[in-house]
View 1 (cartoon, rainbow, N blue to C red):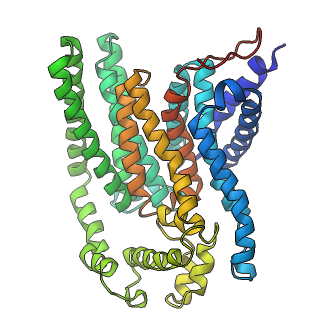
View 2 (view 1 turned 45 degrees about the horizontal axis):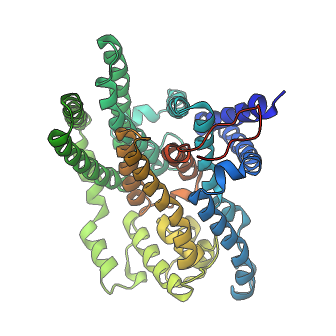
View 3 (view 1 turned 30 degrees about the horizontal axis):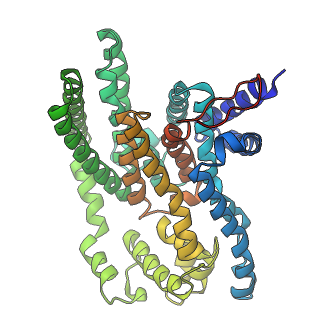
Length: 455
């Protein structure tokens, strides 16, 4: 029996689907699936190193970054303050090597075809729906409909908002494909209804979780996506066939329909009041002055926005002290504890910077930060290359572009990747996007004979 075909690959596929399904409904199962994924991916990388992984730039960048994480520990051992508080955290360091799990989706596409991506997305959406159904009777839905901010019993509302925003963006990008497909009118109407309801659910979730960073991220993604769609429509109308022009116009009409649905939902949920109240609480002009002016950290009022501004200003001072290699992982808490600007209540409540980008550069310095973000920069470049080659559909590329903007902006206001929410979404979404490039030009494994070489 060929163990790779009948055991390893099916088990890897099953663990990835369970990972996508169980993050919210059964977190322990999600963690177990993640461990199985890591072990099997390592085995696959060793076995198929030459045909699949050796020449992949993402793999090379990840190996360099992992080598950096290992070697820099010696520097931290000699240069960090000689106290127990500043010992590097191996647990948090492991979080930074998890982007390698992105590759597993590509391996599964290579082995089982792009239809696997449908099941991956379906598992993720099903997991969210199951979890939301589990919240019926807990009071969360009633609070949401009453205009209260809700978190659906996740760590806090920001993490649930991130998931809702991702759902909204994905469904809005794929809705035009559904309504312009070659299937029968009945099928298109039914599937279109499902996608429209998912768009509505995502929009509802984004509204009731009241997370300003997610709102801003979605606004930025919307502007970029609409700009890309307008540019594409103009180019298609000039050069493409009548059929492609018709589909592009249908896509634009679908975009307008989604916007109309959004406006309807906004009025139905009294969203103008919810958003205006939430934005008023931010006191943006005052905190912008604190951020850009000469305001001392201890003079900043520690409301929700003030906490972020204060930790950002403090982080810039700490980064300047160790700019190249940083303070190592999980030391933001220790720096906050020793900072003279924050009182005891602040130190008890907050242990991170509420900004993932600052977290990365504080922990790893300029060198490590550039290596870490180089992984994701390459994925975005690979999305563009796959689209130009014709191996990635336009709606998938549009989603990739929008999600990159959404992810970058949302992480300005929360350190998502330090938590399972960020790690999960990175693995699923960036894995989905990168699979179009990774599987291109490679041949799947065949049990008869040696593994094929990359073409």
